Length: 106
Image (cartoon, rainbow, N blue to C red):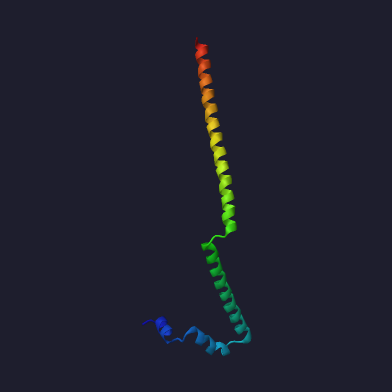
């Protein structure tokens, strides 16, 4: 076994070890460790809340997405109409040019 595994096998659980060795720390170090513990708990709570929010979309977000979807459909329709109009104008312009060339060659 390696030295790391030996240390892991002989160590006590973190809850016991923190209580046993707590008296070896200065009050400032103890306060700092307590703040880190509180921060860790708060981050875990925040992580859980974010996971919950991400898994279930809120009605407000869904309503906003529906409005956005309608607006995007309108924009897409207008874009298609504009492109179609440009193609028609180009086709008419090409046909008129052909007529003018044919009339000019007579």
